[in-house]
Image 1: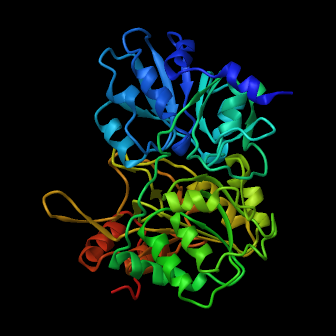
Image 2: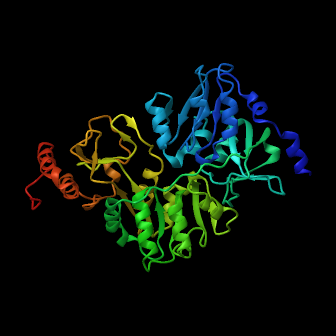
Image 3: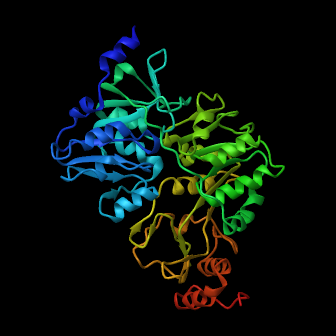
Length: 444
């Protein structure tokens, strides 16, 4: 079969391709680096021509034309997970959050909860067998494609071809049309670690041992841990993560990740989504030592428990004295999303030698310069509880670590107050007394 002829037959301009979108449609952009920049811009130019078009995406990395260039209100933007740009859209009333657990994201499509009329997804160039790699975003892409009535691919030569376990590619015969784009796949700069980040990392680092498998979130704390690993004698680490960032690239370059002792896919690092630098994308292109897998598999607690010696390190925003964890909102303001935090906290607890750590700065400073504690008596301002107190793992600040599993309420309160900023400890003790979760102790 002549796949190139089939490709040419289905080739369209972006303006031609988006004509398939009708009033009331649900359009899916997949997530992160799969965002179809040329198609989004073409669809935005139909503002006022179509109405009530609902768009799904996650982790926007560049401005979204259908949000920023929609004078007629034709489009409604919906997000599975939020980036800094998405927070601005939500704050301005231009976007809406979709609550989810990442391991269930694909099931929302397969079970019909998330209908898809048109899927528009950026992919790598077609190979000799007629396949397009989903590249940096496996996630729930296959479930989106399977649910879609119409499929448009935005073919971009800067999207790397990444091998996969499953759900990592689509054939030319299965798409309605293709559009070519030379816009750079979006990149992000890894945040620099602060001195507070480094102090927090020092409490977690001793638990990272040779041969263990790591799941790292994004931010200064995971970057600090990565730097410590790179300079240590820890070796033969494994990678099993929902999101691959430049922190992993540094560990690969330092020879620390070999995946030698992983129980699942030994010799290969596994991720589901990637965003980071161009250097990271080039490293992944056709790299036989790394594979992508669907989020429903990567984030499954049943899979994670099989990895056995598993370490999960993620961030959070605030914790109350009961051990409830908020990682996605500040009061009513949406910051990010549940993502995979609950998935990995659950999986690490079920793994025989697994551990999960949620890290945060003990305080934050508001716009007036006033200092506030991130360890609270209790949540009252509409904060979204991401990890319930029944699953709260080890909480870490720059003042130490509170190991919460198995502790009664009074011990939780004591452990958390011990890692709070000293300026707030007396107030927290008084609050714990009022909440009947305090006893006479050596805390003072």
